[in-house]
Length: 445
Ligand code: GDP
Image (cartoon, rainbow, N blue to C red; front, side, top):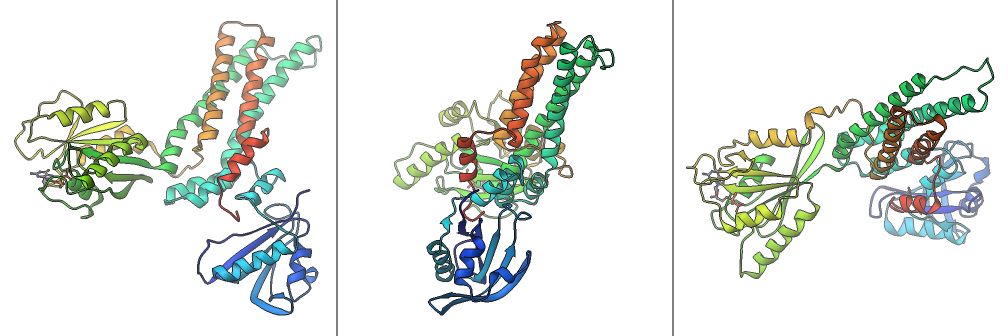
């Protein structure tokens, strides 16, 4: 039993309609105090016309949606008040709800209740947030697949398999004398464990694709001034977004744009050319470029085919050597003066000849392997890390079996697998973690 919470669920700002939501045991009672019709006369899942009033004065003309427990998002009574959009109206109605006994909801608290009340599991809850954050069609598909429980059911099946394995082993250990109990031979256990291991592995393998779809590839284009970074960005985006000149130091701020390959959003940041400079504005740009490297998931380090390698180039090669990077030798249409014994691609931004670079990006992130038809990919960092732990326990199990370790010593690994998979879906959880997860949600969700 929880207290009654309220929040504005739509974005704060001016719009045609806003929604103020209230959930909890006292939702009906509270709204009834500020509504000009008897709310108890409304059936569940209905929308009802009326007015919000304060001291006999009309605050707004509204539509009220009534959802009665337990078949609601939170499994509690929920009322959604559709008000005229606008900051003042919505705030006023929220204020009235709070004055009459509701508490302001924390971010994500409605969804947290849906989880705590057992309507959705943790994967489904996290997918709700991903759905809201989705910036591409593929990210949306991925998230809705999670919301609908397809990923959860895969994980639950794996967990059931592990549970089945342990119960069989326990029965065999505890009641070896019972003849009518199916005896699991070591061979059976090995087969079962190998199966489990490879299924966890399959799911983990798809997580790379899941992460790419969800997060995209944050790509920083870096290089000395005038090597053709802006030209390259324009070719990649197929538009003239960045200013191209032959005056070094033109791009002083960051220019950004994105393309999509197989549903994966690749976000390119064109940075100020990196060189020693005394110009203050340019200097800030250069510092910004270097700091962007830290958060990049891919670096395109651009060099000029028509010039010898400079000390600045060497410095950048050194600075980016531990990053996922592609060395792009631009201006391949000009005479080659560059000597470079590192793996690279050659392009000519000027002539729109960038195929080699696109192929390399494809190859590096295995974009061809992404199948955006089947979207039951695991993509969330928390879920991936738990799955990795389950995989480790499962590797231990397989190894122990191969080394003929006594069966009763295997139980700990199987129990670990069960626990980790349970944590993924939230079958077991600790409160602090739950608070942390839901605090990342937006208010009113
Ligand atoms: P940035 O300072 O690195 O962003 O370089 P820009 O994109 O502004 O390009 C600098 C100069 O190089 C411009 O005059 C471009 O037209 C020229 N340029 C860029 N790419 C190529 C290329 O592939 N071939 C040739 N010949 N010139 C290029």
